[in-house]
Length: 102
Image 1 (cartoon, one colour):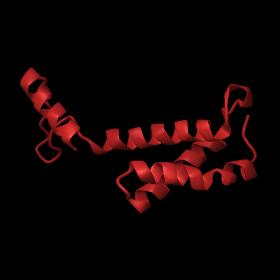
Image 2 (tube, one colour):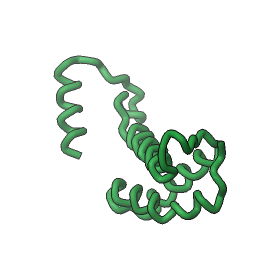
Image 3 (tube, helix red, strand yellow):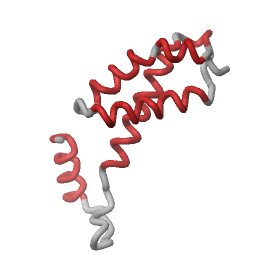
Image 4 (cartoon, helix red, strand yellow):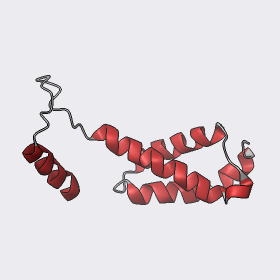
C-alpha cells in the first residue's frame, strides 16, 4: 500500500533531520538521500498493521545511508591502476582499522 502523499510529506522534516545527523552534516547529501528515501517510499510496501509510518521511513532512510557509504568506499583497489584487491589477512585487517577510524 502506498501512503498518501500528505502523510509522507508530514514526515519529511523528521526524515531529513535523521539523515542529516548521520551524514557528517553534509546538507546536499542529506537532501539527496532524503529524496531517494521518499522516491522509494512512493513505490509502496508500507503496512500500517506492522508499525508506524515514521519508523518505516527511517528504515528506508537508514538503508539509503548505508548504500551510499558502501558505494563511497572502494574495497577493490585503485581505479587508475586497475589492480584488484588481494585478499590477504593483513590487508583486510589494515583496511578494517582504517574503515573504523573514519
